[in-house]
Image 1 (cartoon, helix red, strand yellow):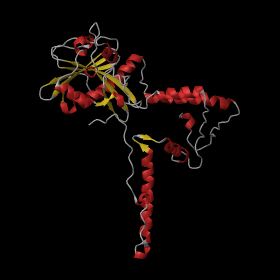
Image 2 (spheres, helix red, strand yellow; image 1 turned 45 degrees about the vertical axis):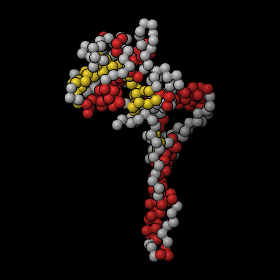
Image 3 (cartoon, helix red, strand yellow; image 1 turned 120 degrees about the vertical axis):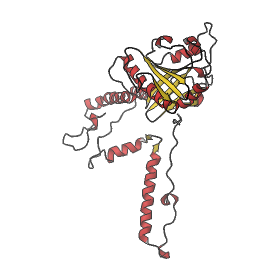
Image 4 (cartoon, helix red, strand yellow; image 1 turned 180 degrees about the vertical axis):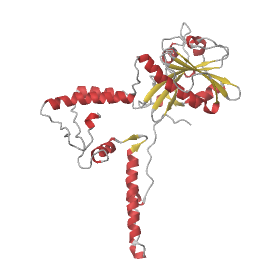
Length: 346
């Protein structure tokens, strides 16, 4: 099953002799002292491994562990302690830089629109009015992600702007998926409450789904579907999923002319239900990256990691320049130093 968006629990080290303070072997009973010392050494090693495991929370390493390795670990040259950290003095400018850094997620974030087209429906107006779908559609959503109450999502869970207040303007549940590298939110039209707009339009559904580059349509309808079926300027790519008999699905990718080919599917293919969800999720993520590149007009995709690195480098330049322009308070490593030059990295 796909991993839940909730945070991973801390893994505690198994109890050892050293951790439980059990008495060592009594020499008066004829036992070998050497074995006792070996057991004590093994206990200390286990306790050390436990301390390292305690420093790992989920998949994030405690900053103290990183600094220890940086100053005295394999990143140093054995004699020098590595580059001297630069002190960042408290200021309004520093606070703004930290807030901007905190607003950039640690993982890649993707949002997708999910639309259900029921039997004999042919227009976007009819698609968005649906409040539920067929049994295979509901199975597909459950396999695609995890239903999470929006009220339980904190700032570390990417929800794509969905309302997390008790008013539940965007529905009570969100469909999320995540791994160690990415977080995805699926704006399923059937999870949003229907509105009583005078025109009959589902404005709130359209506001979220229409602002995604990549959409998926689960089509139980027999009518043909194309990019022109959906309105909006962000319809760059649509993944069309059509259920077939005998647990098979037909997958098609509809894309704008200026969007590059991406993912494993360039022509319509038939895929069994045992693999269809994994393939569709992979297509959606790859297509979102391709669509973002096409929309930005750049030749390369700039990930959140690259953005955070740019912000850190900018903060370093801003707060290092006053010190260097004065009395050269920040010491630079000498050219004949054998240690790694971290100033060229950050």
